[in-house]
Length: 374
Image (cartoon, rainbow, N blue to C red; front, side):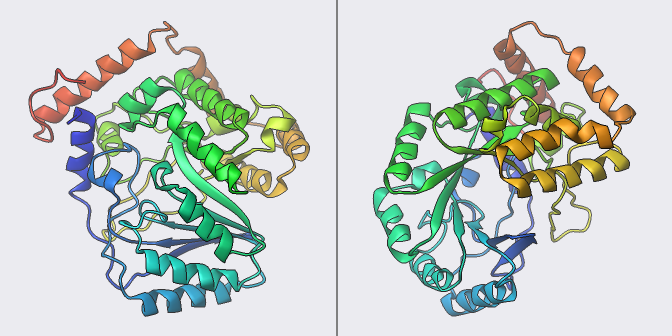
């Protein structure tokens, strides 16, 4: 097993389980409602993929009556207030091993009775098949359907050795084509803040990946990397091997795109949402900035997402500094960006930093002592 995957498995094994009575978690903001089923771990979680992820681990979702009753209750509560609905779970909502097929079918029937314009299903690319797409299309009549899945980076080396995740781009392209052929749209998740990369490299990798997404006629969702409990990223942070990204970098990334491109780019998890864990001392660490700039940037990103229109988004970003003078934390970010060593040897740097991490983890007993393998 790859050493990074081995570390991911080690820290995930320390997680407390989700409460048994918790059938549904949900998040509401403006016209957006997200419903998640806190189920058991997905196969990728079990195998140590996805260095940055921790959506918890729950118990098998089997009580279909209790689940559908709670689902109906939440949908009724926000009926008339929301027009966009996202459905997800701890892994992949379209994976029958992660989420029972009969529960999915019953949930779809309930969802179809509500007047949502847009419905998003968050899943893994490997779970996307023609039959399941046909099921969604047949059950959810007159709905605009999006399939959302994570790519993280379009750079295969970064994807493999920073995220412990391998998704060949040719495979992704085939899945994108399949979704489009089924009359649906695609959201692709992109990470800003890859471990083992410098600030400058993190920014550029995100920009490159978003451009790849747009070139393939998909929508990008930028996730600034949050340091979640029980992850290798958290361990690296504790050992001063990873620094929370600057929230200003998300603003800087958006500024790299044209009005036409911004039409296809959303942002999320920028400090506007809180994770809740069973243990009180478990906290997610969000992108860093001062309190003042955090408030104005979060308000900016909220407004950005609500605008949708690319030209309006572009004008919002262009006019931002006219109304909000940045403080020293913005200058700190620019300084960090400018002093980054730009040797062009990213792969060698990643290898070096990975081995440094593995040595430290072996000393702490979190990893076997054989550190030579990538």
